[in-house]
Structures are given as structure tokens and as C-alpha cells.
Length: 106
Length: 119
Image (cartoon, rainbow over all chains, first blue to last red; front, side):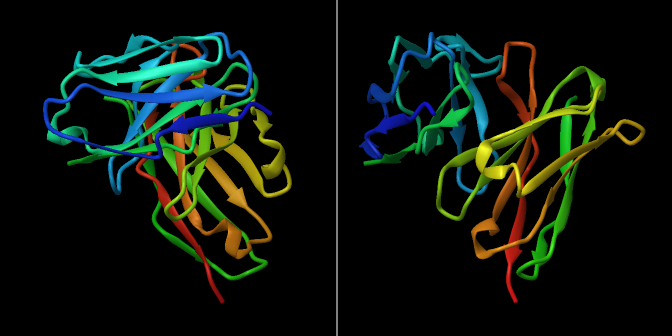
């Protein structure tokens, strides 16, 4: 099974900061990776699909990149409404979520 | 507007079964695969399995093969998950999630159903 490791587990940042969340796969996943945002008490929401494609309606401050085993979600200018837990998800072989990065305001 | 409306919270006794539903609207139910995802309290997300409502075909994560049964009723546009032989490990929120057209990506989610296993 492919394991997905997200870092850091918790990230504190200030409004306006550029924030980078990482996701590392245990083997090459060929860019078959999505990013989901989950706010407290809500269902997850798709942000980015196939590594770098912005889902319709998602603000352009969100972007994704990566290849092979290493992937990144970047928020160019953190907003208060971005406080949430972010999960990466691979579907190259089976279907596996990372453990999440909890993003907090400093 | 695509909507996935899930049933209400469930309480099940250890060893019993529960069945929760996910009613789809706003799209052609048989055109999209439905997935189910588990989230234990304070924990991350686990993929359980998927069902193709048109053909009834299914696939499950290995750890859920004896725990979950996925079905779909095309007459009511509703997907179901039945959880059997409940234990405390099954206490969790269960989400249905539609796979969109961009690959095995979940573009719409239900609101989640909390299942509590308690005697």
C-alpha cells in the first residue's frame, strides 16, 4: 500500500503569509494526487485535482505542484477563512489519504 | 445543483448492523461512481470503497471487505452503506462522495453521518 506523509502536522501562520504544505508518497504516484480542505464540523472540499488543477470556485491563492513522490499545496496569502485541516489523497495505486496538516492562525 | 443528502445519526449496539443512506440529486445518478469515506473522531480520512450505481459493481479497501456492504437503488437515486458486526472501532463519521469527471477525484460530498457504537 502507498503511504502518504504530510508535514508539518500543525502549522501556525499569520494572515497574509505564504504557506506551504507538504505531502510525500512512499512511492511514485505519477501526479495522481488531490488536495482537500476540511473545516471543523464540515465535509471535506476539493481544492486541487491531479496535482495542480484548481477546482472550479476555489480562490486562485491556492495552488498545487509536485511530481514523483513529493507534492506541495501553497496558499499565496493566507486568509482567516483558510483555517482548516488539509489532506492530500493519492489514487495512483489504491486510494490513500494523508494524515492531514492542521492550519491555524498565529 | 448537485446534492448528496445523507441520513441522520445512528446508534448501534456492539455486534449489530447499521445502514446509512446517501440520496443524490441534481445529476444523473447512474453516470457517476459513489465512494464512501470514514473519519474516526479526531482522526483523518479513510477510503472504504466505491459502487458504480449503473452496474452495481463495487470495490472495497481490504480492511473493510468484511465490514462494509455498498448498494445502490437507482429508482430512488440513493446509495447505501451497511456496517456489520459493529465494534467501538466503527464509531466514526461516514461520508459519501461522488467521483467526478476529472478522474477518481471526489467533487461532491455528503454532509456525513455520525455512527456511534454503544451498549
